[in-house]
Structure formats: structure tokens, C-alpha cells
Image 1: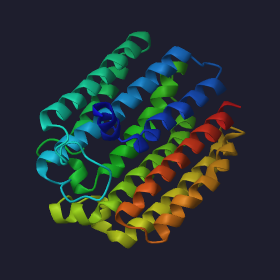
Image 2 (image 1 turned 135 degrees about the horizontal axis):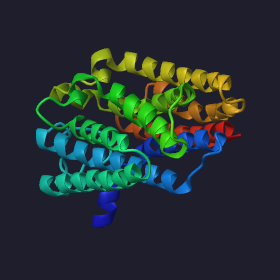
Image 3 (image 1 turned 60 degrees about the vertical axis):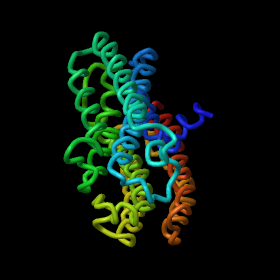
Image 4 (image 1 turned 120 degrees about the horizontal axis):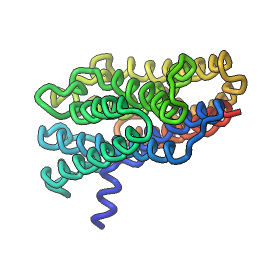
Length: 287
């Protein structure tokens, strides 16, 4: 029972955001003839650890602030009283520590610049909802997700295998970052009522229900436009467009006016869209 709670608290539906950038970054490495499986596995470990740590940190910080008391989403450990705030905070720090250890190993194998990037990612994960002025409470969550689970994760994964950074890596990182933002947009759309009442001014709260639904649609379109543009550097990169059918279900739900708990499945289908993108896009890039 306890393990089941911890798994639920890790928010499995959000984990594709950690897998996709590593898959695409590794596709870039394969295309360059520099695939390094150990570095790729370590990068995946760092990415997953940061995602889980951020989720537990969010659970802890929102829980002690009372933000999650009236939310309609999946269970939260602190707000529901299933786990103490102290224990959840320790879990968050534990996964941040794991990310740091794996990052240190990567740095020893590649470059110590990785440590600086990793430290920035850890701070971003904590201060999303933690600290005196969490940036997630002021509408900047999407920007930081795009940067760290898009640009940084894809380029970082490619860098630890190839050994250099180029424009092509940033180009393919853009649709990956957008796909991660889509997950956050669904989550924040669902929580508009509870966030607004608790003073959490997410981007969704700021632009409103209708604006957030439009934003999601625009992001999906932009994501696939940038996938198509990958042709400029990777001949078969547009193979990632095969993920388009996986966007139909979440778009139908969001554009159809689903609210509250009705949006929980949309989080899962958005995650599946991300995973489909990871498979098709990374394979196309590798080819």
C-alpha cells in the first residue's frame, strides 16, 4: 500500500516528459555516429530523478501552503494526509540527491560544465513551488519546463555522447520542450478553480479557461511544425509526424470542454502523444 502511494505521488503520467528528451538527444548522437549507451542511461537516470524529485517537491510545497486542499486531480500525499510533509520533503531531496550523484558521474566522464547545468536544474525543480516566491505561482512554469525538459535535456543528452553542441540539437529540442509544456498546460487547466482560489497565478489562471484550451491547441500545432522543420538537419526527422494521430484524443478532450477530473485522462493521452513523439522522432533523427 505504501509503495502504491509513493508511485502515485511520483505522478507516472508526467514521466514521459523525462524520457522523451533523452530519447531524442540519443537519436541525435546515433545520427552523429557517437552513441554511448552508458552516458545515455545515466542521462535518463538524471532526467527521471529530476522529474520525480520535482513532483514530490511540488506535492510538499503545495501541501504545506494549502494549495492542494480542494484540487480535482490525482491524490496528493501531503494535502490528503497520507504522508507527512517532512517525509515527502525527504523523498524530494532524496531524488534530487540521486540526480546530483548521477550527474556527477556524467561530469567525471565528460565535462564539469554538466555540474553547473545540473545544479540549475535542481534549483529550478525546487523553486517551481518551493521557497518564498515560487515561480510556478507567477505564471513562469511553462517557460522553465520548456527550458529544462526541452532545450537543456535534449542538448545535454546529445552533448554527453557527442562532446559538442550545435544548432541542430537546439532545433530538435524545441518540439520536445513544447510537448513537455503541453503536459503542464493540461495539469494547470484542470486546476484553474483551485489555483485561482488559493492565489496560485499560473499561466492558465492568468489567461483563463478558454485561453488555456486555445494555448494547448497552438502548442500541439507548433510542436509538429518544428518536427517537420527538423528536415533541415535530419533527412528523416519528419518521421516524427507519425505521432500526429496520438494528438487527436487529448485535443478532442480539451477542445471539447472537459473540466476537473474529466481532464485526468487527457494528461495520460498527452503523455502517450509525447512517447509516440519520442519513438518516431528519435528513430527518424537517428536514420
